[in-house]
Image (cartoon, rainbow, N blue to C red; front, side, top):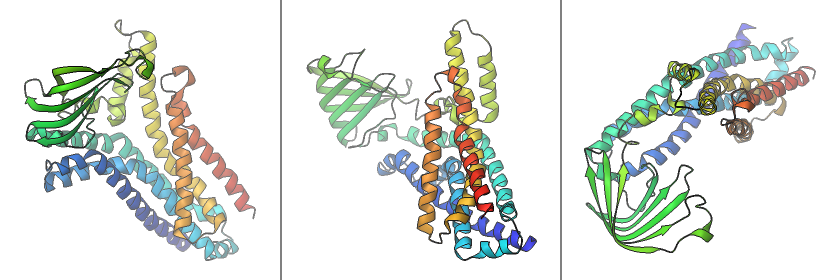
Length: 379
């Protein structure tokens, strides 16, 4: 029995390690393209800084890759063993499905513990260091933030696109001002412009020449019937604040980038009444903290939930092909995170208890897995 358990355990460990590595690579490439490509193209990031930034992104990718990787790894191992009739031989020797599953559950529990540590400690700390390192790189040459033919979204309330750049001089410039809901309230296009860095104000100053400005209705900016005609202006100036890219303060205000102790401190702070904050708003903020805490716990326990459903599914489908099992895993992951996303949409309505809704995908997967266990064990 111990020999069988060791055989299954180490096969699952190796398969899951490969699967987690694959998903980490995919997520890392996506994050690098999104966050760092502009800096690399601008020659702003050297090789050493690039390697450090990529390494600091690793725990963030592991947060999502670990549940997906363990699901895929278990499906691959059990699908192959079932296809090769190994599972049939093991069960014929008197070992139940629960006996076959014991080493996988042990490994899933280890994975859940690792996911909790990553979600609540390593990921927030590494993400903060990542933002600080990136800010240090940008601070050396702030003007290089302006990359031609790229939609630049690093500035609070603004999106900028530049057709060409020659030092501080710019050509074919577009600027969109956004409201709190990310809707365009004003758009400007200029033939020429100039960008300068205001160090005391920690901002870039964009001066436009010969521009046209389109003003939209502040209350209903998406109603194009109320768009005012483009007005010509000889010159205009826009301030581009750098607080998003030149300091970690804004990063640490994002709840998902806080450690467990920071989240609990924030929750306790919101427990106390503040005369300046209405009770309804304070409860909404407190619920967002609760949702973040529960989401991190639920994401970690997804490792166990995915294992619960992967074991009977891997035995039942009897597929040896890697691509087929990978496809099944991706469909399950998509369903899980779709459920989590819908639960997160209710975070502004505390009466719906979105913090508890975060657990519904886990409960659904575990209930389905338990039913499949029952069906497989009776075969």
